[in-house]
Image 1 (cartoon, one colour):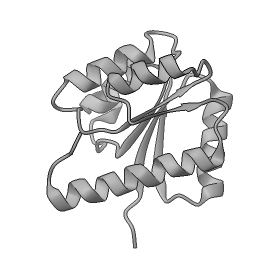
Image 2: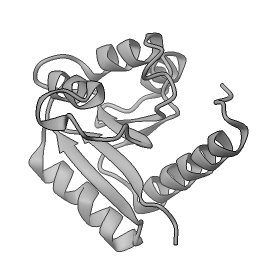
Image 3: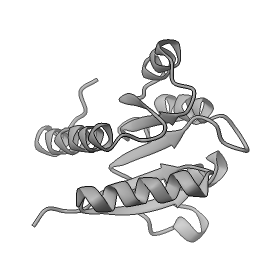
Image 4: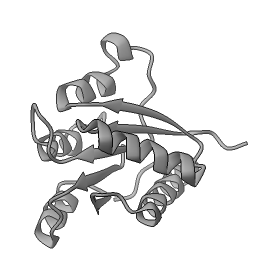
Length: 145
């Protein structure tokens, strides 16, 4: 039996969060999904504070770029410069997809950038890639960038 993939979705739009959940269900991805609506709550989750005190770090984070409190790109930058979070693969979700946005996000540490609305095949590929990455990290003990 495979361990479930722990997924953190940082998304402020309830409709997009619901679609994401439904896509995972349809893909039959074994997962635990936690949804938070803004950057500050995501940081609280990642730091294991408050109601998230006993939560394990996610295996993957899907991060919307446009959030109400801070831009998702700022969170991505924080994660890429913080040793405690640098190993968490981040997939960016954005309705403003362009090659320039994608390049900036990847340069800031994102594993990939997916345009909204989500495409089932791309979502599955992103999750499968991260699962392979997690297996690689578990077997080698370190993350290759």
